[in-house]
Image 1 (cartoon, helix red, strand yellow):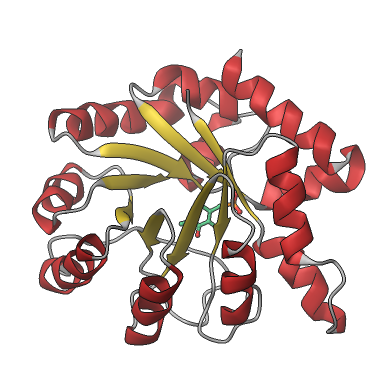
Image 2 (image 1 turned 135 degrees about the horizontal axis):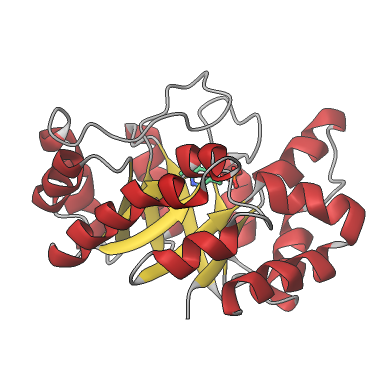
Length: 238
Ligand code: PXP
């Protein structure tokens, strides 16, 4: 069964607009899990403009599913993850001022750096995933980095799905076939939503997990969080 990990950064963004504790990210994580999410994802950025470093420990304390922390592996981030000990860490090459993740790793160029970080996480028993595009070289070099999984960066799929779904998914299918051969686990995320999720899932062999934030939290404004999570789960199952 493909897991739905709900990224709750947007909840923190709303909270931070006012300061204080409303909406409460810990409560949101509890409810996401209660309503059927298979995991919770957070992406603490260096300026803490969404999820704060302290949120990570609050949320960790109520996790009953799978906890995934994403981020750029700075020394501060690595220490946070080693202390929080999530089930999975997803390494993203985003600069501190990026609005959202906007590229995958060049795994050849950054191999030594990534290998070092991955070794530290694996020694601590934390599963690792690398956010990458569908480029074959990047997948092959990801294997050399020693990562357990890759997370396919699906922005291009979501964008092109609207005009030509078949063409949009093709590079991701090819990437998944390569990853399967390399025995890399496959996650996916970015701009997945209720319209494009099912087609992606149906076409990608051995997809393990999707990480969804922006569209899901936005849908929840109109449809309610419980209903929305159920709708995403239905798209995964149908
Ligand atoms: N995966 C990674 C690595 C991300 O950085 C993000 C966005 O924070 C997501 C998945 C989720 O993307 P979206 O918010 O578009 O669903």
